[in-house]
Length: 339
Ligand code: T6T
Image (cartoon, rainbow, N blue to C red; front, side, top):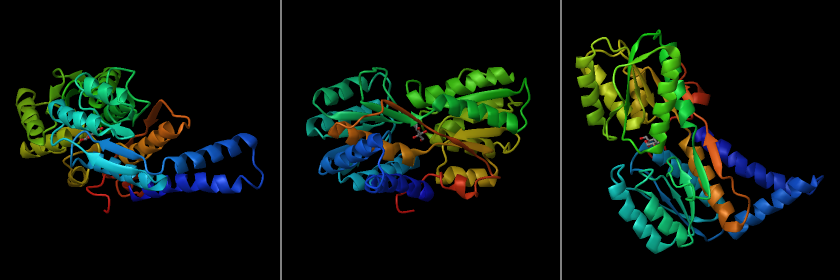
């Protein structure tokens, strides 16, 4: 992430450099854009922005917060970060009601549920706060001036392709373990995986199973699945905590390496499991970039600059073989912004 931070800082620097150097031989359009960007940054100073993450303490959201903090500093806006103790709309919604009462100028939010999060977000938006959806979204398309997330369908497809790279042939038995239905990101990953698994000829041994975003439940689910299907060949675990729990369950069953595990996300503990051989591949997102761009879009919305309605960020497949390459290692998530 440190390098990603420098890249992001470089983007800000190049906007500023562009604004300065445009005086030498400006193309009229870019000169106008540069002046507009500079004016936007200046006039956003002092605005109040809240970041509501999906769940507190998750290295994915910590890394997103690091990006948002850096962008907020560059724009001179204040940032306050909050999040529920569990990824659960019944816990996040009361916090969103408090945001509605506080009326920040803008809200970056990862809603916990495509349907249950709509009402509190509508109240916030109707109160005049500009909303930028970061990571997860809601079903109501009228919510949010901008939506920034990983291309999650593509990420799920990459997970299935990773199983093929690991040697799974047509007919291999596979299982998907996700968090909960109604979480937009993981639902899209499941779709991308299942569609590609069909193309590759894999046999899904059951419908998608759920960890409720708890590593311990993920471990229990895979333990039961191994008993039901002793010749299971591969598992796709759609997010950080699910993948951690699945890898633990596979290890406890003495099946590390025999049952191939592809997880989503790249938290510090997941990287240790990759190193240990309990997980074979991880699809890492770029949460720092999502947070950084989220603030940029919020600032644009607050200053009348053009806003991009939808931004899809990239993912990258991390394995034991490439995890130490600098261009891969920089995407490992952070447990705190200083590390
Ligand atoms: O995978 C991320 C995030 O994209 C998803 O919406 C929820 O789970 C994570 O935060 C990882 O724990």
